[in-house]
Length: 420
Image (cartoon, rainbow, N blue to C red):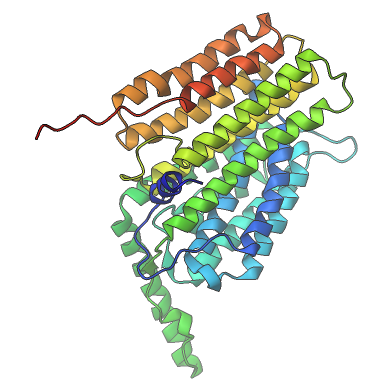
């Protein structure tokens, strides 16, 4: 990632300067942890190859579940650095693996077996609780994204164990809404969250002191520590968020490569492959050049985590949806796209650019970029989706490539000379 891009990603998620902390990079443990996310993203992308609107809604929920665990443990390892517990990371890794294995059979009954919904629920709850306990054991208050520590949206997931049918998935959606809402509201008032967590710790300390006094024991050291605000390492976190983008871009490459196997390599497939690869490279270039936000000239201002993290979720989910669409196009490049796949392919790219635009507006990007580049890159993919059933599939990807290249070729306006 370029210096400007790295700075943009880093400052976009900064929760405070980590004074005296040298620059560090993703550890071998974190990179090992990411491997299971690769599998989970691939499984979720497969759910979108023949989509209905219900499939898309369920993808949004399942993707958030995987993303939230990855984010919680990434924040935990970011704060704890070399003190990160191997057990916490491995629990998360195994849990995501279970979720990935269960994902294709969520809301899809296997004859004689049923769905794997409850396995997915159990793995998700276990991982979230484990990540939360790890942060609490460190006596830190994660004001950047409180859901990572407090699990505000877990109650509907617990309740869904006793519910069958589509109401179960409505509860999952409610849990996500509570998670995101709670994190955004609490992140905007961190002093209130710290006060509440300190009061809770004081009550726990008083209770344990009474128990220790009755038993003639010495209070454990962990009860004596006062909660402190978690200080993020912005450079490390920016790198981790960027690596997640690389993971989903890799999924897009894999979709095209696998779909191309066993087919006649004629010119429509060649055009689809070149256009698809060009689209992937363009998205990678935007991340390389401008950082996570894909917005030029904002790295000096930065963004709050409660804006940057939801945008990261939306951008990576959008790329994953586009990846699923690219795989379908590569399997039949000369055919017309019908059903929901055209909206998944084009809509995914629109969501990516919409989230980028939100980051640009929040960071006060220039109006020239917003109206001349950002907004058109949202609108045009939706227009392409509307006509996708009338043109060959490879040409749809070529049009999306043109949209991405429009973002790539943006050149900042030359600074106005100040008269002497």
